[in-house]
Length: 156
Image (cartoon, rainbow, N blue to C red; front, side, top):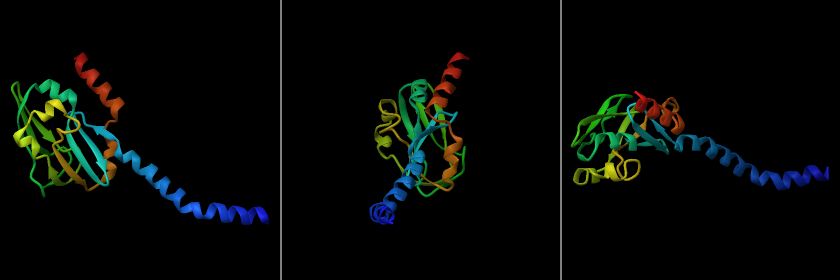
């Protein structure tokens, strides 16, 4: 009886903390970066995905000279064109990896498109999308699968 009383007094106050940390652990899976076969990346936090092009893509493009950003407020579907990147070598369309609503764009790219070359997966992000269906992120490649995808492209 004394042991039961002791465990109730010691463990019960910590139960909400344990439940909350379990929920946070489940959420962390959505905070990881994912990749598309078109060389876009997305990192999701609090239901909003930040997207951009990968380092692999910017190297293939060369020096970026212009970025066409999506319009804030637009609703987009998965694989829908949302913008474009032009470089000295070529132009490339940017596709949304998920469906949702554009809630922000990287205005710094307007005056400094080279951020995509110098920091493609950090300061060179393109847009932020409020996800309509957060489970879509699970269908995208993780870092290992994306590295294998890039290696397979180089072999061809």
